[in-house]
Amino acid sequence: MVSRRRVLVGFLVVLAGLLALPVPVLRVTADGTAHSELLSPLGGTRISLSYLHSVEKTVVREEYDVRPSGIVMVSMTWSSTGAGLPDEYDEVVDGQYVRRAQTRVGKTLKYWFLPVNDATLDVGNRRVFEGPERESKLIVSVRCLPAVVSMVEFALSGDLPL
Image (cartoon, rainbow, N blue to C red; front, side, top):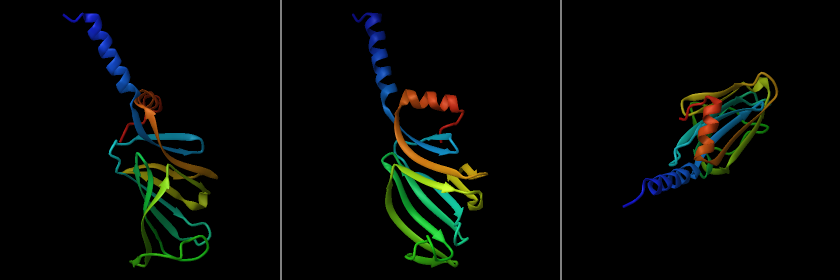
């Protein structure tokens, strides 16, 4: 017969193991303020970044798939060519140059924006960044945290997982 103490110890060992499992998290940081989103272990989260190009004054839209293994650019759309914009594209749709790619970016995207850039960042259907009001560094990164750390981080931040 198995004692209650053995069952309890076994349960606690299993629970500790589950709490230590790595959970992929998307972190968006701007102006030192962090915003985190829990990613599905299967990935498939889409982020959309839109901004006004500061030299060419054209709106640029970048689409990324976020996976536990990292960030992949899937498309970029813009309406003029010139300094700092790609000169290669796959097609023109409604006057917009479109570049389609499956370019693995890595685990981190870093941008530097000014108010004139009028940038927005959407994670899925949720807007997580808009502005900035002043010069700002925007960092988007994927990292794995132990499940217990992720739960504490989300509880302290007030953010809800996707």
